[in-house]
Length: 192
Image (cartoon, rainbow, N blue to C red; front, side, top):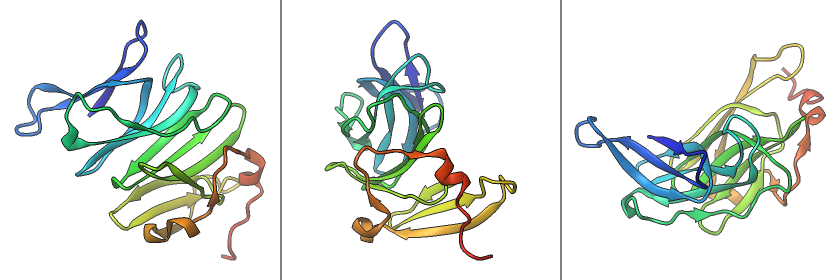
C-alpha cells in the first residue's frame, strides 16, 4: 500500500495491490484531506500521518494523525486527530494495531516527540525517553528499540515493551509541546 499525492490538488489517496492475487492496483482510500506521508497497516485498520506541505520528506503544516477501518472501503472518511503542533513537522515513522497509533515527529532545527495515541478519541501520551530507532505494535504491546544519540550513536541501548492496556500510565500526557534535541543528546540511560 502507498500514498499518492498530487501537487495540483489538496489531499491524497491510498492505493495498493489487489489483495486476492497481488496483481493489479486498486484504490484503498479515495481521499485524505492532506498529504498522507506515513502509512501503517494491520489486519483491521489503516493509519498514519497527514499534513500539508511541499513534500513528505520535508516539513508539513498542520501535522496530524489519521485512522480508518480497512473494511470501511475506499469511500470511507478517516478519523482525524487534532493538529499536533503549531509549527511545521516532519513525520518519520508510524505503527498501528487499530486501537493505538504510535508516531515520531520533529521540527527543524530539532524539537522532537514520540507519541502514542488512542485512536478515535485521540488521547495522546508522550514517551519522553530516547528517540526510538524502530518500533512496532502487537494487539497488546508497543515495542521500542532505542539507540544512543551521543558518541555511540546508532548502537542499540535496549528494547522496551509497553503494555497498551496501561495506556494512561505510559509516558506523560502530550499537550502540544515538543522536546529540544538536547534532551536526547544529554540522556545517559540506565546503568549498563
